[in-house]
Length: 490
Image 1 (spheres, helix red, strand yellow):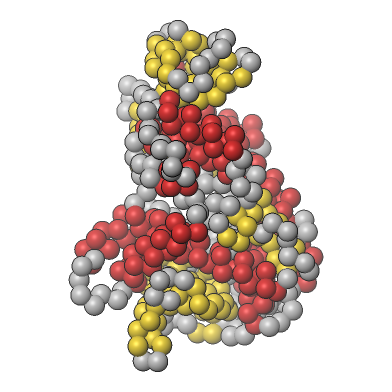
Image 2 (tube, one colour):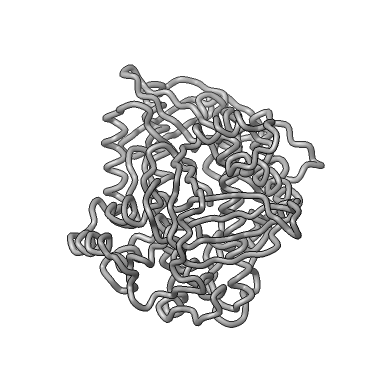
């Protein structure tokens, strides 16, 4: 499920103390155990790869001449991916694109069963709070030795994906290689570079081609009937007199960048399905009741939704920079509930698709931040090399969905608790005031209202709340200590 990120734009002690309490309540790890830190420090100095890892067809080939670049949020140190895009030559003529996508090779440092690996199976994934992050791997690896930092030679799984002129995959391969990233950009820098290059003749640089390939892949996404949730980042300003909530919509380059990751995940799923062994990210189609609830919510917020428009198309057109658009996008994540990981060894799964992707899909592009990606990468390297899947991968597959499910539940609980805390702190000075809100859900005890301003959503007491209609509500409780926000019909 996509995550809505919340961040502090200025220091807010009340919120920071609250976030620390949330992490303690949910048992989020604070530090790595000393044996894990020691093992990571030792692995970071390793000059040769661990014995027994699957090397693949072109083991550690020198690909440092490829002009790779990374695009990540500002300040990121755990750089999982670096890319290079060029036009593909077929018979001496340009025909489509070649995407090279280098993914950090965690298995070059981590051995199955060592302290770092055991701790990664406990954590499952990196957890994000508005004021900090709780990483999957110790910084000596995740933010240094294994990270694709600029001007550093690094081991990687190098994907080579050829696309036709419409952006469809025509060939894929992945093998181990040594790579070097030459540029580290944040989203704003990448967008500015693209904006200044678009329209220039014969511009075949990676960033210019990223905009081309990204748009082509977006068009294919629409044709597949996929769902694209452009969740905004929720920003909390603490200015000394109170708190202010605002949204930051994703830049176009963020969506194009995500398309390269989706492309790779779909390619990985195809390789594993063909080989009869792997682990997919799966999601059932949303039920009609969930779609109907989203439609009522749109009506309550005065957002038009013609009956002829599918929910995929409706969600795609929402503006994440507006309060109503952001609220509906957040609500749309409920239609993606039921996502999980499906492992198989032999017969392919009966339901291999991820309904939001509208195709089989696997997580493989973020091994520094998600445990399952390391497994998928190892599987795909072995498949492309025509060698046996490593024993530790095959043995670990059956238990991996449960590990990832537990970490996913923890991540969702942390995200939800932090958002609830922000909203209760934001609303605490307004207890007793009246607001206009749309009734988006009902039950025998009342229901849920979505305010337009400020853009918060909470429980509302009252008999026979009119589903889908706008009503006046009074804020009864806003308690940061318990993260309780409660309205009553005015």
